[in-house]
Image (cartoon, rainbow, N blue to C red; front, side, top):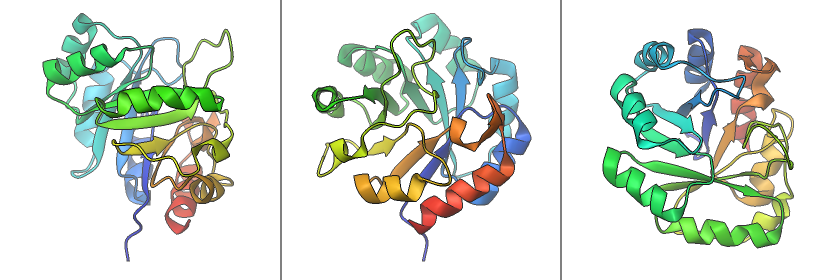
Length: 215
């Protein structure tokens, strides 16, 4: 019986990573468009990779506080299924992006303490999906992909109007525990399946997805 756990492998930069994610059973693949990130990919390269993604796997573009000019160029160049907003975008900006581009929008929210959960409630009525990530350390260059986990017990018994995905410090060794402790049905992994920053490891991708699907 197929597992009801969905896995997103984010920060893919080459066809080997896409192939590994697809073969292992990922339901989402993510491409990062943020120059400060070691996982940043240029639009022409992303367009070629997106064309390589098998049918049925959701292609997600991660952006950080992108303006309309950038999103116009991105959506015009790369065949996408979803936009992931990973910056400080407001509820109003999420609604604007949804209306302008006609694509589902996932909004990432950093969580470090219980008070941060209120933001998830605010965005749940607007975003098509929520990404519950670890809050980045103060002064960090990256809003996500820092390999940090947060206190998963904060999410116990949480229910939102929008589907949600768990991120932050997930690895093949802890993803099953994270799923059990949070009740997440979707997980997003980037640095946890890398041999070095920005370099995906096919064996780690397979191991993580296998562990998640068995959780």
